[in-house]
Structure formats: C-alpha cells, structure tokens
Picture (spheres, rainbow, N blue to C red):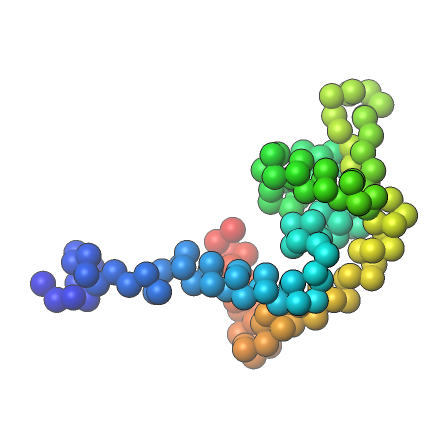
Length: 144
C-alpha cells in the first residue's frame, strides 16, 4: 500500500480536509471582522442585519434565518437587548412567542455597520479574483 492509497490512513492529511480548510477560512474572516467591528460578534451583527431586512420577527424565526439554534440565538438576542439594540415583546395572539425587533439605536447601528460588513467581505475574499470569489460563494452555497 502506498501512503496516498485511500485505504491507508497514512494518506489522510488534515490540512487537505474540507472541515479544516473551512475552519481556517472562518478564523481568518473572524479576525478581519474583529479588526473592523470590535464591539459586536459576527452572530450579533448577523442578527441585526437580518432584522434590518425582515423587520420584527419571532426569536425562533430569526434563528432559522441566520442559521443558529434556539439556545445560541437566545444568547445573542439577550446580549443585543442588554445593549439597547433590540427590543423584545410577546406576540399578541400566541403569548409564548417572543418577538424581536430593532430599536432606533439598533437601526442606526446596523446602518452604520453595513458598509463595514461589505469591506470585511471584500477583504476576506481579496486573495481571489472576482470570478474565483463568485465561484467559491456559489459552491459553498451548494453544500449548505
């Protein structure tokens, strides 16, 4: 058996695995994000940006829209509420349903951050040509 034979575990190279490569790309992106937006995490920004797009929605729906489980989105929303960026309320009919919306401060904050978010994306994709970046995004969307 040669070292590159798929049946040989010695042919396994961690640095060639999709999970490892995605993790490194994510770490790079998070570092770029933090260099531009130091006072919010990427999940917090995602929540604000999606609320900007869709308006008030349930906490569970927001979690689904930004690909976060219920426990994670609750923590994100609690931290944003503590900073006065989102408001929480009960649904008029279904009192068990928690609604989340942007406050005026949250709206101002996300509007100021969107241009920075575009810059972050551009910096993250900077090593690629425009065509490569478009292809990468299409391929990643295909496996999501």
